[in-house]
Length: 143
Image 1 (cartoon, rainbow, N blue to C red):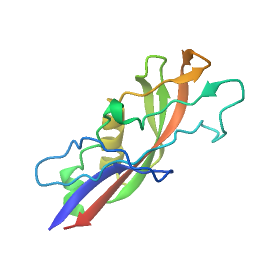
Image 2 (image 1 turned 60 degrees about the vertical axis):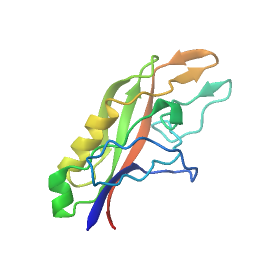
Image 3 (image 1 turned 120 degrees about the vertical axis):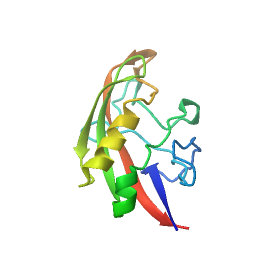
Image 4 (image 1 turned 90 degrees about the vertical axis):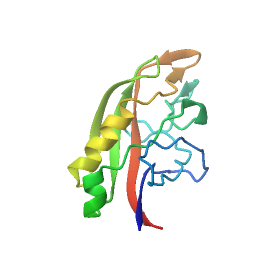
């Protein structure tokens, strides 16, 4: 029997548990700690600028549900989303930066991340709007 997993793909190898948003019988692997990057993939500038984050365990951002039709068809892939995060930590805009080549998977990632909460970027002590990239991996697992 195959189980479906929708996880956020980690650029860093530190696990952080999340609560899966999957139907019964579908196992979701825990997302791993993620480091947000600026759109140009540059490190934060000197002077106390901190990038927005979505990997903190207390945010409890669940992975997307694996679309049933995609599961039946064996569709897997990675979606990279660009997210405009407001000063309040809510996503202002979410768009596909790199498609999984499966529209259902792209849409599931968009819908889930649009409901996430983020730790906003900061310039010193002041929260600021920012853009970051969020990788989401959809992988079917045998088990």
